[in-house]
Image 1 (cartoon, rainbow, N blue to C red):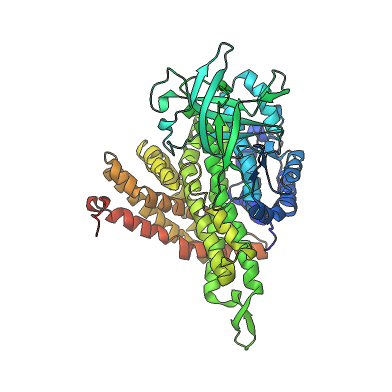
Image 2: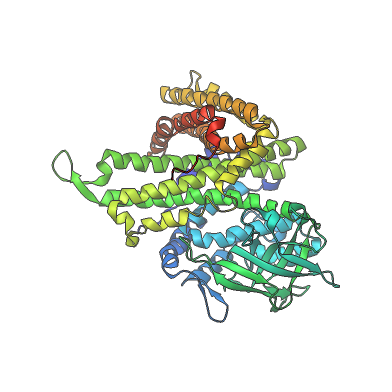
Length: 593
């Protein structure tokens, strides 16, 4: 199994030259962030990812997390020590404010660093990913006392955080949550119930775990309006932060999973001894709104998992293709398989789609920086609307790509890819959870078509399309070369098709929920391809106009060209699906037997 080399050049290129670092460093909150600082952070993160986390990826897959007879959970060999190094570097708080003990750096930079963690060791990176979501939820919705008690310890990595949403009978339908929170005389709540699929629900890497738990109070109405959010620490904590006795929460089992074996996915039981002590976050009945603060953070991060696993699978497939010899060259010598056209096609597809998805995820992260820190209220609102529009695209499209590219990686290896010792199969097994995590990709598509397009009559999307058309006009100007102009025409065609599909969606889906659900997934994929195409056009324009002649820039031009000729045309296929879908196709056919 090959080593992992973080794609530092691509991160720098996208951050500095395509998205534009000035997009975020001109914000007052980031006035002291310089290009040199950004490069230094990327370099240091790369060292930890490649030298510490990546070597543990295979060990974690083979050993897995284990629930011991005494009810404690143990992570694989090297995990605890690696986590200590992670915390020593301050990486958990890269985008947290300095007042909370963080680095106070842009989400844009934090997103690039997070991709490195996931690519080097996805099972490890899930722990800080969930903690980051919990930090955001408490930052926005926690009381002053809760923030003072929990935030600095979570930002430092001293304590980790979890999301406790679903239950055996609920699945993705959180209106069916039954966990109960009974108020006590001291202002706390007694929490009882069971939660499933809790990532890093228990482990030994930190002295405490801060569980954020959805539950109902006894007087709560049915449905999602009756759900509240509670802090339920693994160990009770004094007002000054000292660790007290074990809370009434226990790990009753760990799931046996297809992949990410090293990540302990726990079934947690609350209240076996009468009730776990919980603290209300925000208002009663507003738990889902609080949790969705955390959920949006997680959805962007899960989308990056798709990009990351694509990158790791690509690097391994590329390395294998250069070493494995099969067939002959034109001179009769044994040929490395990378010389074969079909292998080149698979590798270019992996590379090009990964780079497009990376551009999309980092662009969405930059929009979050603008939404949080723009001085102008209208500009903040516009950036938030764009981020909201993009997050389901990042989550769904990128994670689908992660599976597709990990599968291609196995294919490049041929029969050896199906053998565990090469490690190619692990990437495919690990990748498969991401399209399911944090709302399945079908749910992302329904969210996109419903909340992000139909709700505002495509206003936010049309603003983005208009901006993309302006880029196309610039690319079509006489200052650009023929390669750029050809790509601009391809992007223009794709944007026109997206506008036509949007008109169909607005016409057919506004009052027809069944049709909206039928069109949601192809519509999301079409939109993701088009928006990514716009960003790849920007990348192509930048790379083509550079006075430098480097291997990286030459490779970027080729990657962009492949995207426009081989991947962007798939958007037309999605447009045809949308245009051709009829009412009769929505009904399940009668059984044949």
